[in-house]
Length: 126
Image: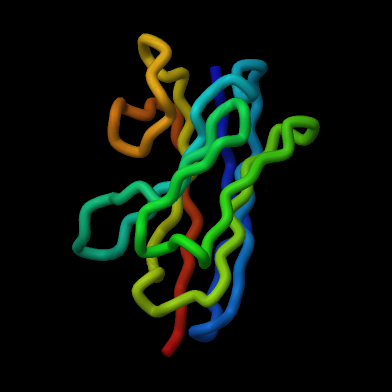
């Protein structure tokens, strides 16, 4: 069973950068869809970025060109590099993992993710 632990959150001025990490335990990590979600106060959780077992990535439009999702299989760690941060990026960020059902493509909304980290807070100051 996957166990995920995020780190790297904090407060940063608008325009700054942060890198989130998500350490995973369990052997299935490398073959799963891995994703970052975020939830701002009073808003629904939204998917931010996803990476599949081969390294293909996908992003929501609002972070394209600013965020980069990556993983290091040797370290069983998922990353989210966030540049040019905006106050609208303020949220609790969660990493998630799932074995896509029926061999589906890795997406942010096509199936339910069942493995979640505890979340890490990102605050972007004006």
